[in-house]
Image 1 (cartoon, rainbow, N blue to C red):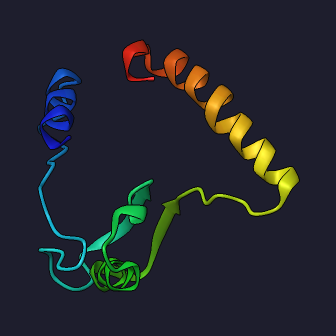
Image 2 (image 1 turned 180 degrees about the horizontal axis):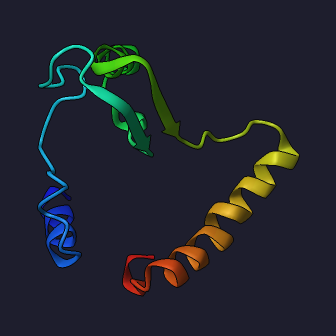
Length: 106
């Protein structure tokens, strides 16, 4: 995935301002209070130890900085579960194909 990301950054001519790195969510290789903002979209679900990973994110975040995490969880209530499955199996793939123009990925 990292190699694909690097290729995308190069294709968009953004490699002078975006650097992608391999790392460990439980041992982020930056000093305390380094970043103004941290974002994660569908990433924290892959943390081996969620609390440790979130603690690391907060450690490298400057005081007053913003941490934004986008995740979905599977609902337990029947009504919401049906809506969730419809959205994830019908709406999201179609929107992804349309927005990304990368039909095979979806």
